[in-house]
Length: 269
Ligand SMILES: O=C(O)CCC(=O)C(=O)O
Image 1 (cartoon, rainbow, N blue to C red):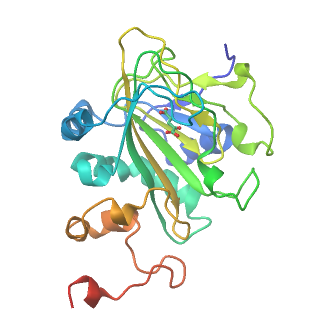
Image 2 (cartoon, rainbow, N blue to C red):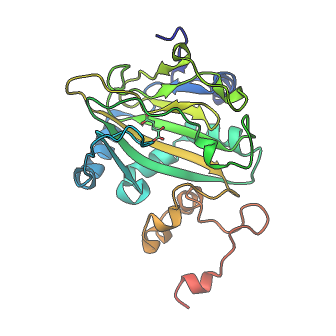
Image 3 (cartoon, rainbow, N blue to C red):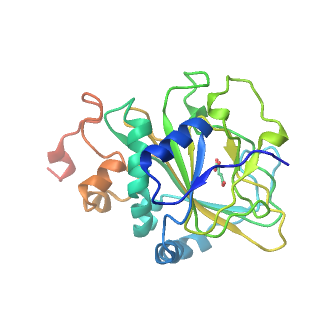
């Protein structure tokens, strides 16, 4: 049992205050950031594709536990999730965390994650671990968010978080009393920094599935973990409002000329 907690605040807290807490603890719950209509719409839009995702048996050696359902490509699958991607609080925190190291920043991963009864704890990890060229603590590379679609509890798979671990040196392991499980009501969002140790939580309930939408963001000049350019049909991406397409990483010229393309080819020339 941990004596630590994940700090939380209301949606009207200033972005500077939120970011100060994130910088200090590496994690923050913003309560009730999405209204119930938004959450219901996300659920409705994702229900049909999600129903086609099989629940697999657990293999304790695997990074992703079994008894879970995971579905990616949410910018194609849910119009409402696009608005979660661009929520004004996300924009403000992203600007503060990521604009220091890149002129632009972009969506990294989008996934709907359901954790079923009997699921074990996921292995603790850092979102930034794929960028192996730096040792932790790394420069600001990633901001992560987990939107609670269902209520998150300590029993039903609430995300495990190790507050403060974004400042740790490589090799330091979390002890059980340093791990906290995110508890938040549907519509709230958990933010954490790319260097914060975290993982999906064990679900010890009898029948309560935990449902969340994870959206992470990375610097404009880093490769996205989920290939956003291949996660939405091109015609659909081209029809998006420019700011949304830009947040997905379709822009020309991130830092310097990174990402340039010939628009006449794109338009069928
Ligand atoms: O499901 C969660 O709460 C966290 C998921 C996660 O960390 C992952 O998918 O790598």
